[in-house]
Length: 418
Ligand code: PMP
Ligand code: GLN
Image (tube, rainbow, N blue to C red; front, side, top):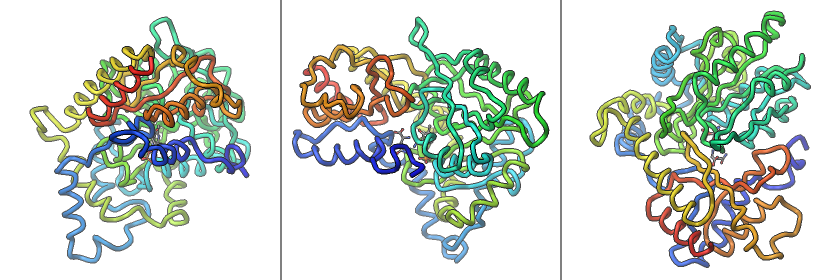
């Protein structure tokens, strides 16, 4: 009952994954699925090799329960890497918690920090699952709407953020690179957020601070000029920030579902305490494989200085391909610098949608996406689940973590429409 819609309607993810399967046979070559953000290719060879090695491990320890808070080979690598990102020592046992994907990491972080009725500030638009997760953790969401400026960039104003804060605010979720917009918050923008949080905490008692959950799952998918900044590395933010990330996006392995939380021990301890009650541990072989991959990815890869650099570069190209295709189809793409997605304004195509799709039960962008998938074989995700109220213009999210072939099919179908 606590879930959005009382838990009776499917999430946008389930609806459009089911729809993609249902209508696939109607289109030659199948639907072009630019919906849910998962690459339609297997992970790179060194990642598959890591998993193969982990699966072939002869000792029992490689296959039985791991330590609940995380398999030490993985927490050791994570602690070392985040030590560099945060410019401090990170303890692999007390300051890291390994979870089943970033999804569980977020839920654990929220349960660990919220009291009943605590408010969670979400810069809007926001990743839709936060809303249900905050509700499950007993909290209440408080949107802080971002606006699109003259250049098409999403901005969170300092004033809006200040106004969203009340004495009940317990957590602010900072998601950069951002889903769905692809915004990568600049250092200046993050420092403004950090200053507002710091000033708020001057009036609060120890233990009652406004905390930050930094959702950084797309941190290696920065394909524009803006570099990823770890929020916890900013002045005074280390002690109040839980940093969440996962392996899925970085290694094109969204099904591996290994995530983590890194933070100061007083915030990680309650997260670790929760883990045995949730899933006892994340899968041991996956953790072992990832422990090998994280550092291996620093080596030269396909002519680039590292796999991470190669990843960002390949997504920069894919983003251009998709943005050009959208423009050719009269869908104006908003700028994006990171993540897997381009958001486009579909106003020009909306009038082509037949009336039978406008039944009023869902927002216009949602109806449009149903029509686009069912009649034209292109799956995309409506933006309205990422907003509290229906957005003032129809925005649709298109994923470009797809093969050039799929992007080409989608481009041709969109073009034919306009
Ligand atoms: N946060 C954001 C912003 C995401 O887009 C996703 C993608 N599903 C997640 C968290 C969850 O990541 P994971 O697949 O590791 O659970
Ligand atoms: N993060 C992915 C997306 O935004 C997947 C969402 C999900 O399945 N939870 O597309």
